[in-house]
Length: 98
Image (cartoon, rainbow, N blue to C red; front, side, top):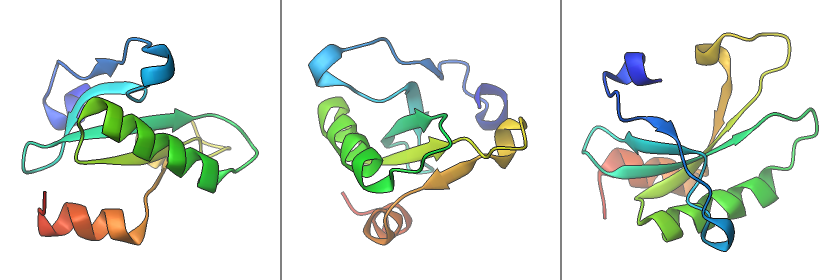
């Protein structure tokens, strides 16, 4: 993701225990706002719990919103993995609202 976004600061997020801030640090949207990114590698999909986790991480991180990046089994290509967010989060991102 560093190379694709031209940001060498994007890296694994240090662990913060109960104040989880997501799994990837320094990801920003096109308006420069931080995003909390939760990464999952499991064959069992648990979107409701993962989304709660992403929104909690966003609040802890002071991020605009949270998204889930989860493993697309059968391919290892990073750009082919799944990204999930709610429709409200998508609108929030696209409108550029605070």
